[in-house]
Amino acid sequence: IVTQAIDEVRRIINERPWHLDQLGITRAIKSMLEFAASTSRIDFAAHVEDIDSLCNKEAEIHLYRIVQEGVNNILKHSHATEAVVVIMVQDDHSRISIRDNGKGFIVPNVEESMIKGIGHGLGTIAERVRILGGQWKIESAPGAGTRLSIEIPLNKNQSRYGGEIENIDRR
Image 1 (tube, one colour):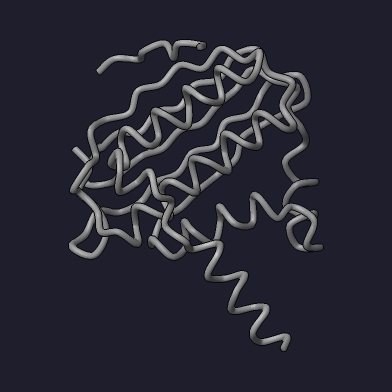
Image 2 (cartoon, rainbow, N blue to C red):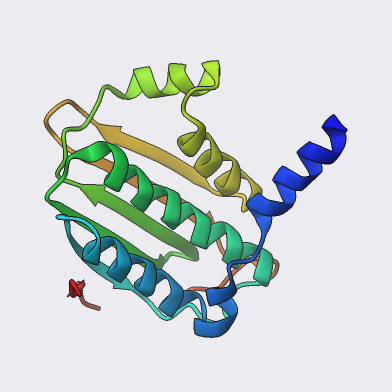
């Protein structure tokens, strides 16, 4: 029974969001950001390059969930008034930057929390980045906001990503 429960949790976590197929990954991410802006008091801005058809379906799920978790962390924990999400290609790597002007935190505490099993969201981001063969880092300090930087190498099995910041309309 425990094995079945674990398998079911894994299936749900890796389930492909329907809007990836309906909208494509680029529009699905932009739609996620529009929803976050419309349901919060945070001003979101974004630069999301057209990445449709440039990565396999598994990589799309991981990339979408990485951005989703980063945005959820801003909404739940940051107390920010502004946030910026950038997805672009540079030097044969995809680069994702998610930053806010929120309250920030002491990064070593987060790392210790992840070891103790408390920082599940950041742990999930770390695992997805690892699966994609990438690297990530978090920069933050109390009162200084937070920046999540992710770099994922481009290869045949993942994606080949390749502007301006645009404001996300609140609706």
